[in-house]
Every structure is written in structure tokens, then in C-alpha cells.
Length: 96
Image (cartoon, rainbow, N blue to C red):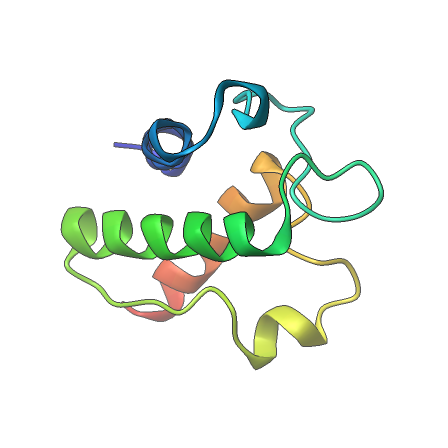
């Protein structure tokens, strides 16, 4: 299972908890932070939690997406599907 598939599953799980007008579309244009963010901060935290659980279930590795490394980067790894995916891949490589 690729990281983007895990992100899709996480968004689907999150959407089950959201009202119809709050649901998130899974696409390359989906933005999680910034002026065009599709979710609020509480929903973002919930999404991160779901992603971390799915990663642990799939790879048997515990990673923490929100950490010092994430905040020290020039561009946030939480900006979009693409940036989160790349960031997760990087963290998983560090765990091996």
C-alpha cells in the first residue's frame, strides 16, 4: 500500500465523522493549511492522528508527524497530499 492510498483511507475515515458540507475531497489540489485550507485546526489534528494510526498498522512503525522536524522545514510538510506523502516517506526511511 502506498502512502497516498493510506492518506485516501485516512480522509475517508475522517469524512465519516464530518458533516456533508465539511467533507474533504482527495485530490492533488487539496490543501490542509494556509489560506485555502479545506479543514480547521481541530479537524487537522484528527486527520494527523488517523494517518499515524494507519501508518503504525501498515508498517508496524510509530511515527510522529507533528514534530520539530516538521516545523523546522522551509515549507510545511502539511500543505497538501503531495507534501504530506513525501514527508511520511522520509520519516519511514529514517525509521529503517
